[in-house]
Length: 103
Image 1 (cartoon, rainbow, N blue to C red):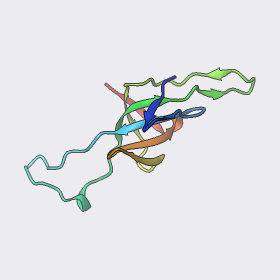
Image 2 (image 1 turned 120 degrees about the vertical axis):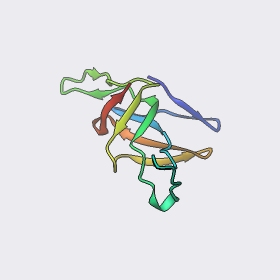
Image 3 (image 1 turned 180 degrees about the vertical axis):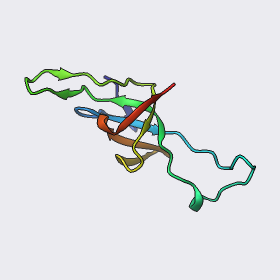
Image 4 (image 1 turned 60 degrees about the horizontal axis):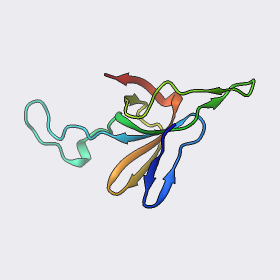
């Protein structure tokens, strides 16, 4: 379980949630054309910055998350809650919104 320190406060995701730092997408096409902000698609790849302790099972046992801090992940396009801290974009996601670990 890891947390991210924000301006003297500690942000710790709860349950099966995780905090993902959004990785910026390329600003130009393969042909060399630079894209304006209005034409860019929302990134779906990020790096896990903090994870919660895991969900509780029906028996009350803690089920650990499959991802850990530092993993690069692909997540659902419209998932999570967007946060901006010190001009860095983050998403607060549920583990079910993670589609894959990117290696």
